[in-house]
Length: 213
Image (cartoon, one colour):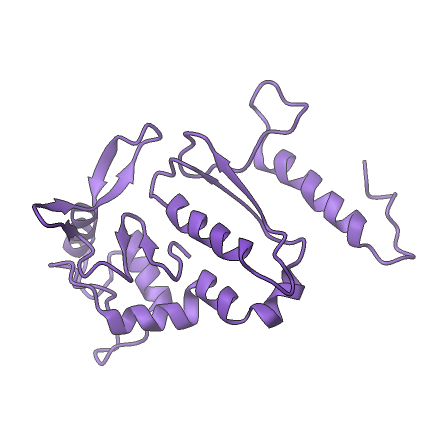
């Protein structure tokens, strides 16, 4: 999910903003960015990307990213199509749809709501990596998720977070200590973590040797 219960949705904040395309202060109204490079150079605005999708197809039928999220997360509207999270033309956010997303698909909100049940099941299983210059600003939601999980009790979450300095989208985590070439792929980064977890949680009589090599 690209946002948390405190609202980051790429550059927009669905919970506090009233418009997904612009943000107004006491002196100025500015465009909300959607995409950037690893050096934080902005390459697209929310309005630009969404208007491109609207040109491809009405009723969320573009097949592009924002329409895809809407198709998955939104309730069915009276016209049979997913209810828009915001007006595709103007950017005005529908707060009733935001509430639906929060209750059904906002992972952070659901974790906080159901932590008593979910927390014990997730111990040792949450390992999250994201570039701190994520191309689509997804790191902002991850920072908030980290803060919420740090505040959990009974149990206190043991989730780990890896923020790659100046890394864009698709950052897969820190390099293994043995890799000085920076060429380790995702499997080489993740499989050792999976192996360690399985060894630490294996039943007493389980085979913990024949498959480790």
